[in-house]
Structures are given as structure tokens and as C-alpha cells.
Image 1 (cartoon, one colour):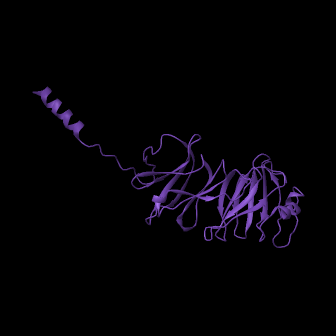
Image 2 (spheres, helix red, strand yellow):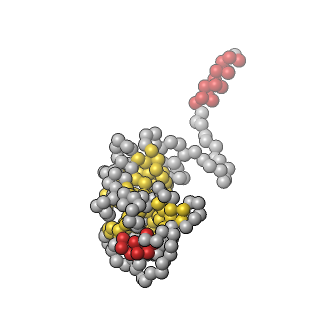
Amino acid sequence: MKPLLSALGLALLLAAPLVAETPPPGQFESLGIPVRVGGLMGCVVGSNGRGGEALYFNFNQTSGRLFLVQVDPDTGEARQFHAPQGPGAWALIAGPEEKIYLGTWDGGLILRFDPKQPDRGIEVIGKPSSTEEHLWQFDLGQDGKLYACTYPQAKLVSFDPKTGAMADLGRMHPTEMYARSLAVGRTARCMWASAPRKATWSCSIPRRRNIAASFRQGCAARQGGRRSASRGEATGTSMRSSGRT
């Protein structure tokens, strides 16, 4: 009789649904593995298109196309959205009007995903500079435009989501190839970092379209120096990782 009861108890135990324990507040909870193939490039928090928030994971595929994974942090539900072009994207930002923007390598394209219209998938906006192949990083200016830093000519480019206009604003240095990191301040000041020389520079975003000449007159011609400039010109200081200017 006892072996029969033991077997019955074991069967009931195996048949019972497994209930996951809710973690205490303030602790991390595993949501599972939404993707098993691809390289994770970054993650941002953005709109889910329905009044809530979602996590957006940016994945590359060196032999395919990049894709976004949208994850609901409350349910763990995940959806994948594949890009029509580009194997990967370094630049990623939750931009104006709750849209997600990506900047690709191997093409230097701006891509956009609208959570309110997920059926449209990831769309190609365009190429802001004919010479640039990498968009390294995005930042949002007070003017509502997206700015990006580039390779191989260390340029500053912009995109206006309201009008759809893209602009190549020129080189941020006459010889550097990498404008690797970017931050745009409230006063239209741009900070960027050059990876090979581990230098940081600052300049003003001018009203005119090309910044190359003004930047050469300002900070590029005198590395480590500072020159006052009239409105629309660039001024800057180069600072090495050692702290020397």
C-alpha cells in the first residue's frame, strides 16, 4: 500500500503547475532569454506605443541584418523587428515622438522604429553624409534635432524629425578620423571625444551648414588652446586622458 501511495504522491507533484516565486521588492528578476543568436550592442527604455514603457535591445548580425527586440518588463513578452539594411548599429536613442532611432555601421544610415506602428517595422530614414560609414552615437539637441558623430572623417551630422531634413555639418577636426562620443548641451554646445588620441574637444554648433572652417580657426588650429569666437564659430580645448591640455 505504501509504495502505491508514494507513487500517487509523486505523480500529483509532477502534474502540479510550477509557480514562480515573486522576488522581493528591490531585487532583480530574470525575464528569460529573448534572443540566442546575435551580438548585443545596447539597450534603451522607450515607449511601448500603448501608453507604457518597454525595453529595446539592439542586436547585430555580421552575416545578416540588425534587429531590435522589444521587451515588456512587466510580462516578459518579447517581439523582434528586423531592419531592411545594416548589419549592426552603434548609435541608439529613444528620440522625439516616442520613436526609436538607430545609426548603423557599414553604411552610416539612420533607421527609425515607431512603437505606435509596429507593423511598419524598422524603416530607413537615409544617409546624412555621403562620406561617413559609421554613426557612433546620438544625442538630442534643444532644437529637437538628433545629432550624431561619425567615422571616417570625424563629422557632426544632424536629423530633424519634424521636417525629415538631414545635414552634414562638416568635420570636427581636420585630421582625426573618429568622433567616437557626443554630448550636446542646452546652449548648443557640442562635446566630442576622439578615440585614437584619447582627446576631448568642444565646439559650438553654428547656424551655417558646415563647421569645418570655423573649427579649424577655433580649436583645431591651436590644440590645447582656447580662442574666443563670434556667434556661429567654434571654440575648444583638447584634453588628454592624462589630464594635460
